[in-house]
Image 1: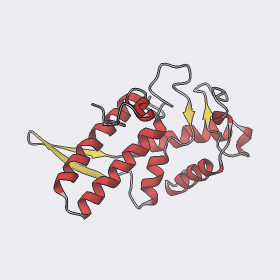
Image 2 (image 1 turned 30 degrees about the horizontal axis):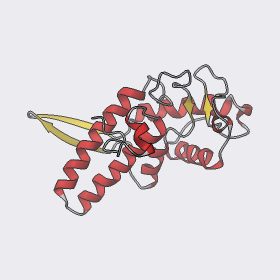
Image 3 (image 1 turned 120 degrees about the vertical axis):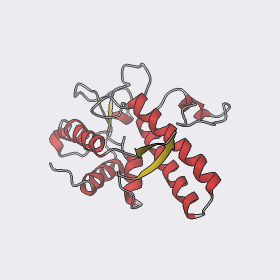
Image 4 (image 1 turned 60 degrees about the vertical axis):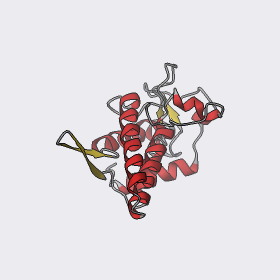
Length: 188
């Protein structure tokens, strides 16, 4: 089981996420699991801590394996023609964690057969790469950078027209992206 939206009741609409993973939902899921880990740590609930840490490990691996393409996180893991669209809010989960005071360097040590493995929630080089891609494609290629971040662009730099939402600029998404860039000291 992948842990990205796992343990979902198959009778609910969210069952879709058991098969198709999205950058937006996956990032939020990782952030939510990190919050659960930290709450369990504060409450000194070792059972919950172990369970949430194992789910977090699985979710991060799945997120990376299914969505990372070397430059950014694909829109989703489907085989649709727009699966590799560039979403301007793909770092929403990371943004939430940073607003809560977490760094992308959050680490924990997992002991497996006497080997120590350091796991990062979000990797700095990937965050930088994603921010660079979104800024260049979703901001600068749309309206010359004067309109905000359009929700979706194709990997070839064209406006994503698969849905009305992908063609829109949302103030909250642009704000979240901008504040993430400021927190990360993004160089324009």
